[in-house]
Every structure is written in C-alpha cells, then in structure tokens.
Amino acid sequence: MEPVDDPRLYSNRYQVTHLIARGGMAMVYRAQDTLLNRAVALKILYPELSADPLFVERFRREAQAAANLSHPNIVPVFDWGEDSGTYFIVMELVEGTSLAEMLRGGVTISPARSAQIVAQVAAALGYAHRSGVVHRDVKPGNILITRDGQVKVTDFGIAQAVSSEDHLAEVGSVMGTATYFSPEQASGEAVDGRSDVYALGVVLYEMLVGRPPFVGDTPVDVSSQHVNAAVPVMTKFSDSVPKDLEAIVMESLRKSPDQRYQTADELRADLIRFSEGQPVQAAQRDVAFFGADATRAVAAVPGEKTRSVPIMSGPRTDVRRRRTNYASPIAMVVLVVLLLGGAIGAYEYVQHNKTTITSMPDLVGEKASTATKTLKADGFTVITSYVKSHDAKYRVVATQPKANAHVVKSETITLELSQGITTTPVLVKDYIGMSLANAESGLTAQKLGFKPLYVETAPSGNPVPDQVLSQSPPAGTNVQSGNVVVLTVLAPGAKYQLTDVDGESQVGATSALTAQGLAVNPAIGSACSNTVHSGLVLSTVPVAGSMVTQGSSVKLIVSNGPCQVVVPNVMGFTEAAASAAVSAPNVGLQPSYSVNPADPCTGSQPVVDAQSDLPGSSATYGSTIDLSLCMETTPS
Image 1: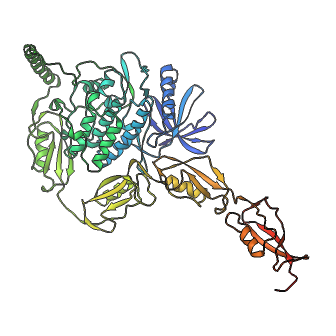
Image 2: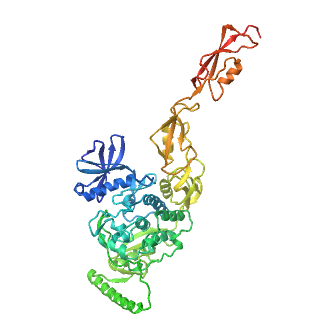
Image 3: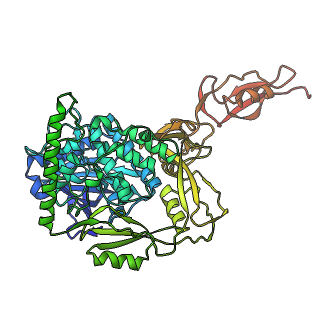
C-alpha cells in the first residue's frame, strides 16, 4: 500500500489514507470510518466512468449484490454512496493478500493447499448461486487470503441475477476477464452458476501449473480459445499434479455446461473428498479430452483486468452431429478440406514467423550445462527448475515440452533438474492451535511436507475453523526432512460446539467467540441472576454447546444483578423454621433476629412476632430481612 497525497474525506465520514489497488473500473483505498472508528476498504469508481450511466449502474449493482450476501467467505459491503459526482462502495478491509499476488511470476501452490483454498471459494459461490447471484468475474485478483488463511471472494461488479437478462455492456460484447471466461460467456450466451464453476476451474489450473490453460496476445485470442480450443493436459506443464485433482480440474473445464459440475457445491464436495484421500467423483466419469497436442503456449495477455470483450463466434467443440448412413462421403470431403486447410495454415504460420517446427530432443539424464548448451545452440530459450530426485545432482530429470514433442525455434524450454536426495533429522514442532497457513509455512521452513485432514465433526475442546486441531506425528517426534505431517482441521462449513463463555466479561467473551470464527451480535441482552455478578455474561443465544458453523452470529446475555423474590410469611414461626423459610434457595434472604421485650412469649419457645418486609412484597435476592422474636418468660 502507498500513502495518498490527498487524504480526502468522503460523505463527511470516510477518510482515505492508502492506495491498495487499481482495477478495471475502480481504485481501492484503505480508509478510516470516522463514525465507527474502524478501518475499511473504499472502492471508488474512476472519474471518467462516473459520467457513464451504465458503469454507475454496474457499480450500484455490485453494492446491492454483495450487500445481500452474508457468508464468511464473501467480503461484506457496509455502505454505498456518492460524493460530488464520485461514486464509492465501503467494504470490509481484508488484511492479507490476493491470490493473484501469490501466483505472480508463475508461482504454483501445493495441491493440498490449492484444494483447500478453492473449496472455500466454491463455498462462497455456492451460497451466491443459491441466493440467485452469478459472479461472472471469478479470477485470482478477486480472491483474497487473510493472514489466518481464510478465503474471501470480492468484486461482484458484474454479478448478475440469474433471472436478469440485461448485460450492461455494449451490443456485440461481454464484460469480464478473458483469461477466465467460460465458453458460453465468451460467446455472449446466457450464463448461470456453471459459468463460475468453469472460471474457478481455470483458477485452480493456474494455481497447480503456474499458468492458465489458455493464453494469447489479445483478449479476443484468449476468448476464442475458450470457445474452440481443447484444454491442454496439465502434464504438459507439470507432472506433480495428482491424477484425482487433475480430473476435478478437467471436469470443471468442460466446454458444455451440462458436462461440468452442475453446482459449485458439487465441486467443493469433490475437493473435500480429494483432501480427505477419498475417491473423487470426477475420476469415475469420462474425462477424455482431445486435441491437446495442437495447443501451444504463447505470450500472456498484458494485464488481467475486467473489460468489455467482443463476443466470440465459431464452432463449439461440445456440439456433435448425429451420425447417418449417408454422412460418410460428406465427412470424407470435409476431412480432406480440413487437412488441406491445416497444411496451408501450417505453411503460412512458418512463413509468417520465419521459424522452424522441429522435434524436442531427449535430454533426460544429461548434465544441465550440456542440455542448456544444446538447446541454446538450436535457438531455444531455457529456464530451469529443481525437483527432488534419486538422479545425480544437476542432471535433467524431465523437460517441458517432453522429448519428441513438436516445438518451434525460439520457444521457451523448461529443464527440471535434480536436487539429489539429501535428508536430515528433523524434530517435529507443535502446530496445534496454529492457523493452517501458518502451520504450512512452519512445516515448509522445517523442510517437511504437510497434508490437511478435513473433518466434519470437531473433537472435544474449543475448535476454531482453519486451525490445526491435531497433528500426526505429534510434536517432539524425530523424523527425516521430506516426511509428511498430517494436520487435522475442520472442513469448510463443518459444525462445531459453541464454546462456554458464561461468567466471562463482555470483552473476554467477545474475544473468545471471535477467535472461534464466530460473529458477536452488537445487540446485548440482559437478565437478572442470583449467581452471576452484574456486568458478566449470563448466557448466550444460542446456548453454549450448540452446534454452529463459521461466521454464525452469537448474542450475549449479560447479568444486571440479583433477581427480585417474594417475601414469605414467617409470623409465628420458631427461629429455626423462619430461617429455613427465608433462606430457602428460591428466596435467598438473610435473616437478622432481635428480641422484643414488650412481647412476652405465650408458648414454650420464642416465635416471630414481626418482620421488616411484609409478606408477599418484593425483596432483592441476598438482602437482609429483620425478624423480631417474642420475649421468653420461662428459662429453657
């Protein structure tokens, strides 16, 4: 963040302090809400767009769409307004980073962590879809990761109600980010929740291999690939993606919406199965993809901002003609034309680029220096990465593209070099109670692997979402570097018991509930209590021990002091009987006795002849009641 030169005050309430980011439609600032004395994120529409009614309406829609969505994985909107012709939205300030920043430079994220992050995004999208809202711009820049590892989805700027038909874009174009378009979105067709599933599949693809499936020189080029090109198999870019996770990605990226996951919840369920080591549904279905060998990497699109992109037209790869007995001659003619067209296209491609298509040499087992020298001599650009392997150090373990694949001179070749296998003894630290993200960082620093084990039912204690509940092997165990530590955490959306904060101060109770991933209702209730001191928490709504989910709202009921009780009639009672009656648990008064010398007793024992509080009147629990006894005339 960079400080602003002009700390403007919007609507006499929001004071901007730092610039956070620049987007396709607006700039996002850190601001101070002077009324509630809290930091917020202030999204301000660009001045040149404020004069455009379409953009203002789209901006208003974002505020309305997000304000109606209350979910722990969605950034909440607090306010929306206009100040001197400038339109703004006030949102929760998320302290952390965006997924786009984490992926900058082609960085990849471990399969386990990727599944955990995308499962939380799918939970947010599933909730939005059930509320009738399609995001339509799912991308890494709109996925935020808090410091404790919680995922939040933001920017519903082009979100659209499922029942709405207005696109708020010029005729012949569609709003969004081309890299993450679904085929139907790029074609200008109607979209639903399955379009967000496709975009999320693109995000997961990028997290695992370091690049999206389709890249090009222009947004139009990328959009066209989404509609017409086959999805490159992930092994073309990385051999480390688990087969089940690859199956989940490929199911999400089907061209036809009917062949994808039908809901974001279905996608989330498969990701949870993968995280728990269970068979995934995607791997049990037909996930064959064709034409991957024809797809080649080209320069990335400059910038990934939300913009208006022309609608694509052309053949859809998911549409197949019905076979008939008379189609064979026509098919042969079409095949000949296609082959001829392909040959002409290849010739024009070579002539246009003045390059040579050749075969990738087999360099596995070669020294890094030798392989690099060979490739550079042939005009290739070489980059290297390192992997653990039993091969000798700095020997080529694999290449991208693989040996014998068709490559073009000047193309970039990746050499995967062996680090060699070297292990050292490691004493496992205690990660219980840490956030999953911090535990992952700690294990990485210890040169240990990790695997989250998601559970739907929390063990005893006070569980917290995204917090390590247990670990295997336990702290203090001696292992070797590279060993995997299993971390048990609550699955997203899992239910757990509400912690008991009865008897705590309001500050202490709020802190404990917030740490448990819950929201404390600002409205405080009160009730009398004969056991809890005034000002302390008497109970909660729901009560302690109730099953809750992350983000659930909890109301505090605070004691306002002892209750009022009904004074019993103890006239004529002996001292022992009167004491038992006024100090009974349901009364709780403290008796104080005196003797009335003017009233001699007529019986064998002194009895109560007067009481300070009238029978049937109210008295405060624990207060003193004065009782008078008659004067005993005969010594006992």
